[in-house]
Length: 51
Ligand SMILES: [Zn+2]
Image 1 (tube, rainbow, N blue to C red):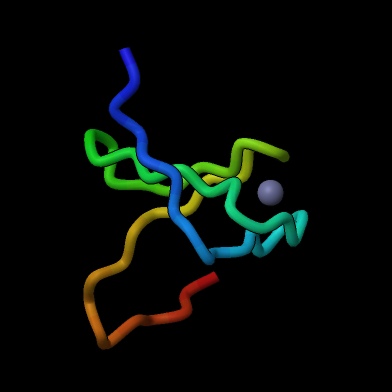
Image 2 (image 1 turned 90 degrees about the vertical axis):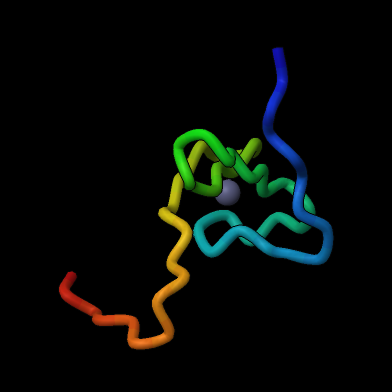
C-alpha cells in the first residue's frame, strides 16, 4: 500500500535531486526516494534550530 505522495517542485536538501521527495502523512515526514533522507514536517512558523 502506498500512502506517500510525491511533492512536485521540491528538491532534496541532501542529494539535490528534484521531485523525489515523498510525503508520508502517517509519520508526518518527508522522505527522499533517491538517498533515503528523511525530514520531519515542521508546521510551526517559529522554527527553532536546535541541531
Ligand atoms: Zn535525497
